[in-house]
Length: 197
Image 1 (tube, rainbow, N blue to C red):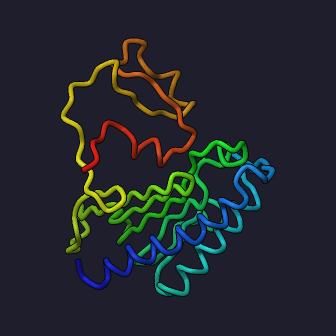
Image 2 (spheres, helix red, strand yellow):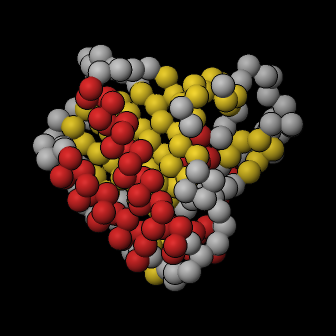
């Protein structure tokens, strides 16, 4: 892996670990307010968002930032970070230990890197995707530095499939898996039908 991608990975690990330590101090101890769209936000979300944005600006001054809690207008930068400083705010405020800090990196609008850290369980997921970016970058997805591979099991009622509560009305009653809602979009995606190596 070249220095650029090492730097991206090390930065993501460092900032999410640091932010996660403070969020664990606030976990289950803060009250939430409603945003205009009806979703929840806490002072912890806003603090984490400011810390992450400041760190990105310091480390990568030429990168743009699109954040759930702040800048919601897509910046005109070649590189752009997508930030959800606290994915799973409802769980966070209720003391349910499933919530994450989510970072993504786009190159010319193409997602090329993602990093999700779950402080309550000390789990880190990250991966690279070249797509049509034209970049030369590492490949694969990783869970705590071990490569993730999808399961080749046949889908059955012994598997679970994560969805958000807004999706249940469109799911066919004969859906072949058990439906689960974890309350964290990023974690939902990361736990779907995978084997960890």
